[in-house]
Length: 331
Ligand code: AQP
Image (cartoon, rainbow, N blue to C red; front, side):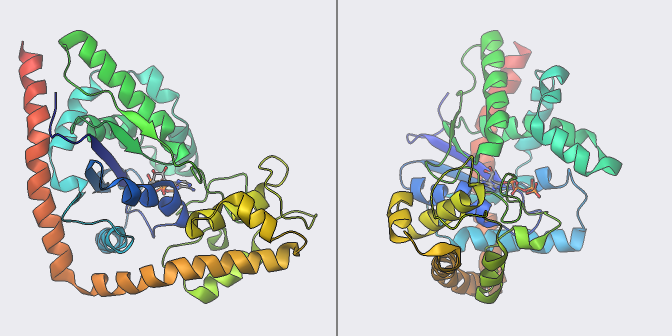
């Protein structure tokens, strides 16, 4: 089944807190690069975000903050569909059906479920468990070809593929089987404090994460505190020098340079100078984006119009697949 002539991309970010540099390098940057070649659906996946308890007033604000970030990094709402997941009921409708084609055993293997249920012991809700099925619905609803995400989401895209293949084997060619797309550089940006752990929105140590709206002063402070190692040589070696390698990846990604180029520039400079160079490149990249963000965030009417116009388009796109699935199930 086909929805448009161009192949389709679907991806999303949870508006569950301030967006991070990990979200940018692992996801948003690639969305911007791919937006010309594909029919793109970029969602603020609010239904996923409520699998962890949110403060409703704060959450409402965060949805708009994240929308303004999407636009400020360069996603064009004229060319792309930028929308709140909850504005398109077909996501939940298809998710229920797919729940009946997903197995408890395969969901039990999901590392994100294990991590998050470990972190939220007082709220291990069913939504957290079936999260990958809702994500499969997000993807399969639009006959998605490519899912550009960070490395942590690979397992979820694989389960979406498995469910699509399983459904197609029973009912015929209903769903496009999606492929995962990871960026060539920066599929897993690491914590600045524990560089063997993913940089994350909800890290207890705010110094571990660069937020896209951090001020230059804060960025400089976080970089100064970033964990490296006891040597002083700027070399890319993920296994033995995870902190330095992470900083090299970050600098390369935001300045569109190669890691090798930065390594040769930093020969004999020591970690102090290296960290200053990383901070400078981050500030240089983030400042103009933050200027655009401020203007966009102040224009509530514009943000509302983007959500409304895109949701109208997306609702129609989603209906096509859902109808086919309903008819198929009745056969
Ligand atoms: N550190 C990262 N490196 C590369 N890509 C990353 N992504 C997230 N962190 C990194 C990618 O960003 C997209 C959206 O992520 P998400 O909102 O589903 O998850 P999250 O940012 O990890 O946030 P959570 O789950 O709300 O909370 P935390 O971070 O506290 O666990 C995805 O494409 C993801 O790969």
